[in-house]
Structures are given as structure tokens and as C-alpha cells.
Amino acid sequence: MTVRLTTDLRAHLFAHLQSTYPNEGGGFLLGTLAGGEWQIVDHSPVVNSFAEAEQFHRYAMTPLEYAKHEDIADERGLTLLGWYHSHPNSPAVPSAYDLNAAVHGTGVHFLWLIAQVNDGQAVDLRAYQLRPDKTGFDQHPITLA
Image (cartoon, rainbow, N blue to C red):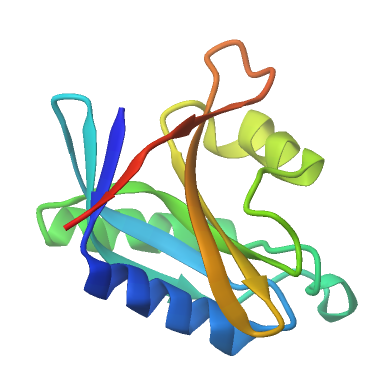
């Protein structure tokens, strides 16, 4: 599987996540899935609903946000592909918390983009999908257009 997005969209994702620093930020990814390729065409930021004192290392959104964004994607003829979030001053790799959230929430059909934001500057972006056996994530290449 390959993940495609434009350099402009990556810049918008980075700008959003830099604005939430030193806390984690995130939102949903909208696009299409065909022929083994996720084509991300838009993103929709969502306010971090985790307890304020924990937002520096946790990100969450409400189930209502998920339902709302499924409707938004449908209205636009797109698919809710997944979500993105930041890891402030930490590598862009899934944490144990991310794995637990995927296993008990989003499942294997969801794409996860994780950005590393160091001292307010986004420096890395990686794409992951939960393995079918739910033991961890597989990383997928990102292609910028």
C-alpha cells in the first residue's frame, strides 16, 4: 500500500500540528482508496478532547467527531481514510497507546499518519496501518506529488 498526498497538503498538516505544540494535535484524513493506494485529498483538524493535563502526550477525539467526519466524507464523495496526529519531541512511530486505540477502536482498515514535532517544528511524517493480527503496525511509504 502506498500513501499519496500533495506537498501543499503535507504543509497544511504540519502547520496545524505545529500550532498545537507542545501538545498533541490531530484530525481526520479524507480521500480515496483504490488499487492499493490511499490518496489523501484533504484533512480536517479536530480539537484534542483528552484531559488537558495529558495532552502533551495523548490525543483523542469524541465518537461524535468520527460520525460527523464520516458524513462529511460521504457528502464530498470521499472516504474517511484515517487520522493523523503529532508526537511532540518524540519519533513519528506508534506508541503503545496508539496500538491500544487502534486495536480497540479504528481497526485494520484505518490509516494512521504520525508527525514528529520537535520544539514546534514538524520534522517527519510517517504512515501506518494496523496489522490484521492486531499485534502492531506496518509502515507504508508516503509519496508526495
